[in-house]
Image 1 (cartoon, rainbow, N blue to C red):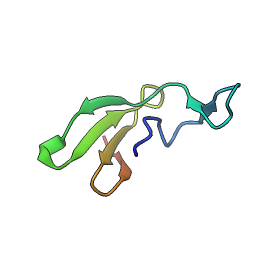
Image 2: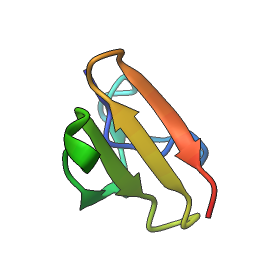
Image 3: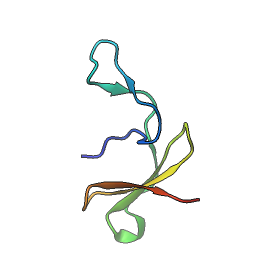
Length: 64
């Protein structure tokens, strides 16, 4: 399952539960891009774009 956190930014974990990741999440830019089962997300912190493929369970950075 896709974690809605940036793979590039420093992770932030909850003080009460060290296994629970918290902080800013990726923001959806475009859902089901070209009908390919791929969503595009942007990180509000580092401003990088990511392509999330649910069919092959992959997160790839997109060049601007």
